Length: 305
Length: 197
Image (cartoon, rainbow over all chains, first blue to last red; front, side):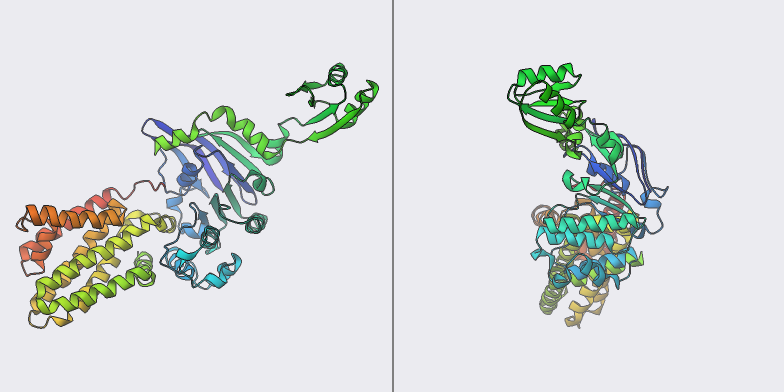
């Protein structure tokens, strides 16, 4: 279980994270979403003891990270892209981490195989692509078989096949009772993976809950186009629908199902050219949430640093 | 702390540029030792400083320190482990490279104290500066301008006292020990700094 309680970080007069409160529970994948500079990375680093909170608490299994008995055996983390010394081979990098974390060196071959780096294990990482380095980061995080994973943009640099592989890996981890907290800007990918969503904007958590509730709050609509838009508009308005149009031709209809709209158009004798149901996806809901809160978020965090 | 020391030593042994540097410094110091202990001390001292600054500082430059802090969140233990590992490597470099010095055994003993001490000094500075290139260039600049051109190697400044220490001046060893203790104290005070990009 990961808990952020009123987590706050000030840099001088700037506030990078402002009272962030959320949890990531075992058996679930929690997506941590925010625009660049919204405070995601700062929050994750506070959870992992890399940045000291100005206020509030970051707890892993009920205690601060630095008070965990064997932290690397409880939490696997990817916090930056492809961390490795370029003069070390992947195998030496993992062995260094195994010594540090108290992990078993016998796991090294297994994790290298899991992330698909077996053939490159004896190569110096200076020759690795970004995707390979990112796979090595994941291997490092998985080395000690930790029940909790904290991943900051782990899909960066991965190809579509790698992203699909990672999605399966994380889903399996959560299904086996593990806790996954993942931040990513690839919202379409996250939508296929996460159970819960935490949205942060300008340092504040603006939404927090199950994915189903997150998207259920946004109203679906049907886009309709017909030969006579004005007549169609009037007929739909008379039927009690909520209407929007940006170009005067396509009408976004709220409150009526596609079949009902078809009936109304038929009764009004307007031939229908298009009738497309739109279910709000994660990206649309996310953008609607963060837009008002994020006037100049990246500027704010840059200034903070 | 044993795990940190072991991992640091493993890092020394498995980073290509580091073990090549260790060999180069040992061979170079061994070679110049035939011209006298002060030459040996200068090469082995500067070489050890640069190697340690590179190993410890590059953990910040390449961000691997993040993994170290995730595995071992108590930063003073990490610092202590880095210090011990650096001192051990410094002692090894001093011992192996001093094999050519046969007529001044007392200087070897001084060197075996002073060289690990300069490794500790360097490791402490590397955790403060966090950028190995800046540290090495800054130290070279300091040596040439401040201690050499201005100080004429007459004042009890870090490198001056180090060179005097390996030449057998006990007071200088004390002064250099104090410089090292000062650097360590600052490194301890700054050890809890946030790890940001």
